[in-house]
Amino acid sequence: METAVKSEHSANIKRLQDWIANPTIAAEKLNVDKGAEYMRQMLLDAGFQQAKIVPTSGVPGVFATLDAGAPRTLGIYFMYDVKQFDPKEWSSPPLEGRIVDRPEGKAIMGRGAVNQKGPEMAFLAALRSFKQTGRKLPVNIVLVAEGEEEIASPNFNQVIASPDVRAAMSKAVGVFIPMAGQETNGATSIDLGAKGAIELQLISSSETWGRGPAKDIHSSMMAVVESPAWRLVKALDTLVADDGYTPAIDGWFENVTPLTARQKELIAEGIRNSNEAEIKQQLGVKHWIKDEGFLTSAIRLAQQPTVNIQGLVSGYTGPGGKTVLPGRAEAKIDLRLVPNMTKDEAVSKLKAHLAKRGFSDIVVNVSGGYGPTETDENSLLVRSQTAALKKAGVTYALSPRLAGSWPGVTFTGPPLKLPAVGFGLGTGGAAHAPNEWYLVESKNPKVAGFDEAAMFYVDYLYELAEAAGTAAR
Image (cartoon, rainbow, N blue to C red; front, side, top):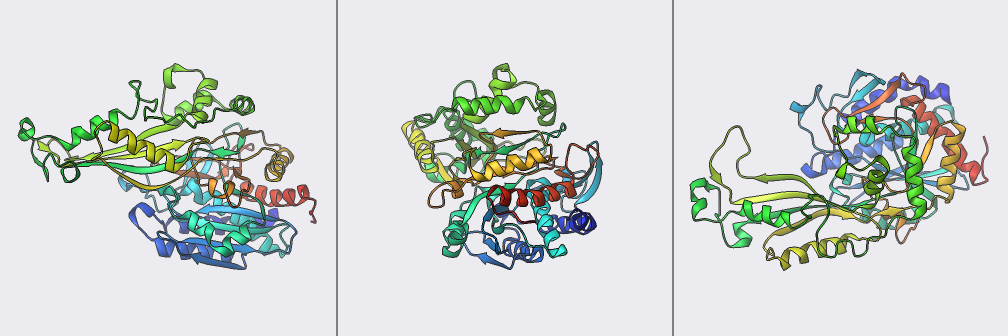
């Protein structure tokens, strides 16, 4: 199998480059139909017997099955969409997928390289090695892919609600999303949970307020005409405490479940494998909130729900000034949720909070979202993954809650109630940022390149079958 993976290295990297060159960007409605068809064809090429497009109210999903005649079935979650990009901010064209030299080794640079096309292509490479060698997989695979993850999955539940998708997925022992989170010392984690996320826009305008200008006017009129931009600023200021980071929305912490002693223990174990200075350098930060220590900050990262301003848009934003009084202002917001918060509860409390303070005219436009997810570390899915990491000699931690988000709750919640985690080897960086990269050839024997990540997935499929008592090589 290893020979098959290595022999396909150049072809697999070319497949990844071609995929990067064909982005689906849900926020811009770019390439949504072609992106789904591209995903479908890749799955068929990798060995799935059937792959079909699942229509939704937004961007389509893709559903595929690979029946190996095995007693056990594994669920896989893919996303085929990527974040927006500004080519001027990149050192090479973001859709080129250029191979670049980095201290870690050779990496592919492009939008979606690590989030999540690189790790997903590594998993497909693992499946291709079975196809190339004519071996049967030790488990069946059922896969669902969506094209709206980057806008908080507004229609993914429709994919899972499709009767044939739900029936196939209900047979799985669990679901994982391929990840590439190894640190420089080779340590990785199994992400048992993730915060929920809500994407929304808060909009202030004369149209809904009944005050201020209907369009941008000369800034001298600020003496006699009220400003929608300032109104939005005043509304935003009520959403967090004076410290600038603690959510202050009425009732926001009402249903928040604190981390358990075991979860805090797992976090403490996890940071022992991490380099705090390296993480700060990668993030470009010098201080954690309140200058807290690494462990305290790690616990805060996992347990605190957040209210974040992604961006502010109003008036003139070009070079120099333009002396205008804007007629409209918009804040792009994301909310991160922890157990037992829900999307509906959070949105309802936000609207009630604004209305109570006289800001009922501020439009709350929810574009996507879902709740948090958690998985039991004792599930068969996780036990088989820890066994695979131990056999590979990889240092790992069980991360109780990823601070980022993916729609794992679609699987862990009703009606499926399946374990769902993030899992895999490899590394990369700059997700959602310029110069995103994914390591394809590693200089460090402790950190997986593309081929090593693919082979690890091969080994894991056998490990899962063995853990389930159905292994046969």
